[in-house]
Each structure stands twice: as C-alpha cells, then as structure tokens.
Amino acid sequence: MTILYKADPERGRQWAQFFAQKAPDVPFRVWPDIGDPAAVRYLAAWQPPADVMQTFPNLEVIFSVGAGIDQFDLSGVPPHVAVVRMTEPGIVEGMVEYVTQSVLTIHRDLFDYAALQRERVWREMPVRAAATRRVGVLGLGMLGTAVLKTLRLFGFDCAGWSRSPHEIEGVECHAGAEALDAFLARTDILVCLLPLTDATRGLIDKRVFDTLPRGASFINVGRGPHVIQQDLLDALDSGQLHAAILDVTDPEPLPVEHPFWTHPRVRLTPHIASATRPETAVDRVLDNLRRHRAGERMTGEIDRTRGY
Ligand code: NDP
Ligand code: OXD
Image (tube, protein in one colour):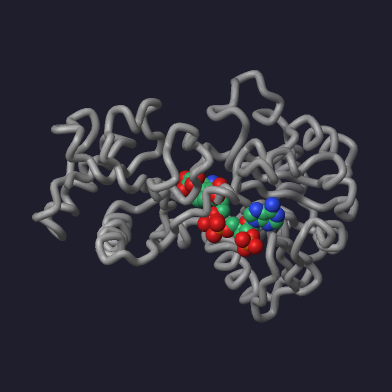
C-alpha cells in the first residue's frame, strides 16, 4: 500500500521526511520513483498523470496537495476512487493573512497614496472607520468563513454569498443565484473565494461589476477563470471599479504583454495567497488514511457531481 507524491519535488522531499518521522511504516514515494505501480493505492498530487487509472490500476484515493481540485482531469477516474482536497490549517492561516492585508490596503487608500507618491504629492485623505466599509466574500467555505471571522474583528461590515444557506455570527449571509445582486449591491470590497466549477467559471463579469456600488474594489484569490478579464479592465478604466488585487489570473503565469502588469490600479501576486504547509499536510493525509481504512468519510472529500 504505497502513497505516491506527485507535485513540487522540493516539497516532496519535505513530505517524505515528515512521513518518515510520523509514519515510518507507510511506504511513501516521490514521483517519478513510483516503485510497483500496482501497489500505489493513494496519490497526493497537484496534477495526476493523464493516464492515471491505467498506470495505477489499484488506486483508491487521490489527494489534492492544494485546497482546490479544479486542476484535476477526473474524466477517466471511476467513481469508486475518492477525491480529497487539502484542508490543513496552514492554508487557512495564509489566506486569512493575504485577504486581510488586501482589504486593509484598499480600506486605508494605499492605491491612492501610491499614485500620490509617484507624483511626489504630500496630501492627506480622510480616514474612514472600518464599520463604514462593506466587505463581501463570494464563497463561505473553509477559507471564506475564516477570512470573514478575522475581518469582523477589525469592525468591517461583513457579508458572504454561498450556494446553500449559512449562519456566521456578525456576517450577513446570502445564498443562491437569486440573492447575488442584493449581496453585490451592498459590497464595497468584493473578495472571490469560490471554487472553480462549471457554475462559477466566468461568473465575475460586467454584470457583476456593474451591480457593485461605483468605486468598489475587487480581490481575486479564487481562480483566474472566475473572472472575465476584459470586463475587469473595462470596469477599472471606466471608474466603476476603483482597484483590483489579483493573486490568480488566466492563464498562469500571466503573459508579459498582459495589461494587468502595468495597470496603476491593479496589484498582482503570482498565486501565493496561501500555500500548503508540508508538516500539517502530512498530518491531514495520515488522519485521512486512518479514516479511509476505518471506512469513515475523509476530511475534505469532494462531491464529484457538485465539482467541489
Ligand atoms: P470550500 O469548498 O470549503 O468552499 C467553497 C464555497 O463556495 C462554499 O461556501 C460553497 O457553497 C461556495 N460555492 C460553490 N459553488 C457555488 C456556487 N455555484 N454559487 C455560490 N456559492 C458557491 O472551498 P475553500 O474555502 O477551501 O476554497 C475555496 C477556493 O479557494 C479553492 O477552491 C481554490 O480555488 C481557492 N484557493 C486559492 C488559493 C490561492 O493561493 N490563491 C489557495 C487555496 C485555495 P456551499 O457552502 O453552499 O457549499
Ligand atoms: C490551492 C491553491 O488550491 O494553492 O491550494 O490555489
């Protein structure tokens, strides 16, 4: 019963060390050292190989090394193979830090101060109370909920939107397509923390930007294809949107000629909002191996029909 890791090789070495420390009895291998393919029951991957079931006919579980699974092509993977996303706490901490600093950057007018600095202009702007700034998070899952709980501590006026109804203390929760416009209309800073599925691809388009109050800002930490990028540029250029902070783009890496690189009101980072931490990831995978062997549902097991 081998667990095979197929993602960043340097992290793979760290995973191997933690497996050796925490579960020396579990055979752990790092791609391309696959050993006997018939012994591979568990695969931890960012992207499984194209012919995964032909290569590993006895595969039982595919673990994503990230929180998302949209990068998997599951078309050749039969339903009895479970697919599990990464839910270790390091991903949550990283995302809370990234979104909090992004919301504060917008809230404290740092895009405007950067423009003034370029012009060598020393000018104060009024400081607004956080309670007067309405933050809205698309997606109330593991990450959206954690982000909102932290933003609440700063006093922001918080709301969220999800597929099914949620209750989060101090957060105005909206659910379903019919509730989207009301959520957007009350949102000054929009954060995308949705998974990429057939239902969410291209969701953030001109209509969404036009429904936000004029001068709203946008933070994308979900996936690049959630957004129609030309609509985002048009909204920035017309003044409908004030600023955008983008950790994810389509494609990645972003081509050097793309206008996002030089747009004065776009801040870009290369998909680093949060990253899986090897030690806690190994703890999560070991706990899930135990659950799987005991016939229990694993933490982060995805529903293949919903796509997340
Ligand atoms: P979860 O699966 O825990 O939560 C997803 C949320 O999105 C749920 O609240 C779900 O609603 C909601 N949702 C899904 N589809 C729809 C829809 N059609 N309409 C409305 N709401 C919908 O995911 P996580 O919070 O763990 O992660 C979210 C995403 O963040 C990941 O899929 C990944 O794309 C991205 N990510 C980005 C990283 C980065 O570094 N930039 C790092 C890690 C993750 P409901 O609650 O009703 O099911
Ligand atoms: C993830 C990511 O899904 O890194 O974890 O985007």
